[in-house]
Picture 1 (spheres, rainbow, N blue to C red):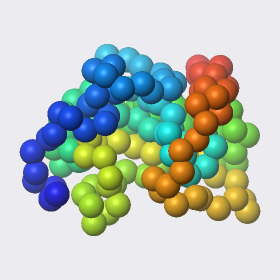
Picture 2 (cartoon, rainbow, N blue to C red):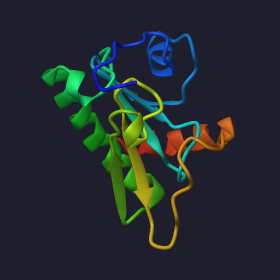
Picture 3 (tube, one colour):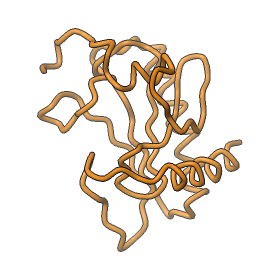
Picture 4 (cartoon, rainbow, N blue to C red):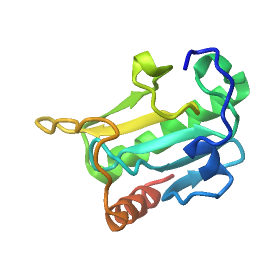
Length: 143
C-alpha cells in the first residue's frame, strides 16, 4: 500500500466507527473517536481516529485534522493523569514503510515512565477487563 492508495472501508477502524466491531471507547464527539488499543505497547495506550475516510495524514481534510489533534491533546492530558505518567508520546504513522498497519489515519497516545520500555507494536492482545479498567480511569480524568 502506498500513500496514494484508495481508502478501504473494510479496515478495522472503519468497522469500529460503524459499530460492526467492538471497541473500548474513551471519548467520542462528532468528528473523532478515542479508544483503547487492543494490542497496547504500554498500559494506557489509546488511539484517536477521525470520523473521516482517510488512509493517512496526506488524505485528511484540514477540519478533521484539527479535530483529531484537539482530541489527542484532551486524551493525552487524561492518559497522563490516569497513569500518573511524567510524560506521554504521540505517534502517527503514514504508510507501511513507516510502520502503519491499519490504513485509517490514527494517532497513538502512549504514556511514558522512566525505565518502562515499549512493547513491540501489534503483538499481544490485552485482556478486555484490563482495557475497560484503564478506560474508566482515563474517562474519569477528562475535563
